[in-house]
Length: 107
Length: 250
Image (cartoon, rainbow over all chains, first blue to last red; front, side):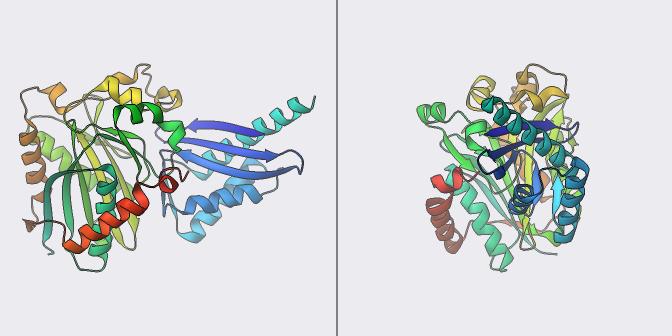
C-alpha cells in the first residue's frame, strides 16, 4: 500500500513523500521524496530515500531527524527549503497513512 | 579578474537549452571556456520541472502534447515553470564557485541582485526574496535555481516579460499546500510580468537592461558556444534531456 504526505513549512519548500509498504513482508519497499526544494549535491536525495527505506519502522520522528542530520553533516550535503525535521515528520505521516490503509484493507 | 563570455539571446528547444548549460559548465570546469552568462528563449514553449519533482504530479502531460509544449527535467531543484516562447527571457550564469559567496542564500542574493538592478533600469522596483525568488509589489517576477557541481556554480532563472497566466496554470498542477502560507487562494495573484507593470517596455529594452546589469563591473565580451560545446550539448539534448528515462527519473 502507498501512503503519501505533503508538507510545506512557512518560508520553506514543498515536500511530498510517498512510502510503499509491502504488506506481505511487513517492510518498506520504496520511499520517494518529491518537491521544489534543493539538495546539494542533487543525488544525495537517493541516500536520504535509502536511509528511510532501511530504518526501523518504530523509530521516532526525533531519532529519524537526528539520523538524517548526521548523514547530511557527514557527507557535507546542503538542504535548502527542507530540514531533517520536516523530512522526518513528512515520512512518519506518510508511513502512518500507508499502515492505516493496509490495516483498513485487512479488516 | 577573469573575462566573462556573454552569449546573446538565442531561441532553442528546452532540451538544447538544458544541455547547453551542462556542456558549458563542463567547458568552464576544464578551463576550455571563460565564465559565461547566457541569455535565451524557448522554442517551442516548454515546461521545465525541478530535479526532485515528479513529472506526473506537476505537469498536465496530455495538454502539453496537445499544445506542442515540450517538457524537460532540469538538473537544478526548484519548481515547475512554464516558459512561454515569447513570454520571458531566461539567463544562465556559469562560473567557478569561488567567484561567489559560499552560502547558498548569499550567492542567490548576489546574482538575483543583478536582476533587481536590471529591473530598476526599466523602472521596476523589485527585491530578492529568499530562497530563490524576485518579487515586485508582492508578486513574483523572476524565479531562479542553482546547482553546484565539480566546483562550478550554475544558476539559471527566468524574468517574466509577458504572461499568459491561464495557459501557465492550465499546464502546471499547482498544489494548494504551496500557496497556503501566502494566504492567497487565487494562484493568478502570485505572479506578474514586465508588461503587466508597464506595457510600454519592449523585450529589447528588458534584454538591454539585463545585459547591462549582468556585466556591470565585469570585464566581458560577446561570444558564442564553441563548436565543442555545441556538439556536446546536441549529444546531451539527444541522449539525456529529451529522453523518457531522464524526464521520468523521479
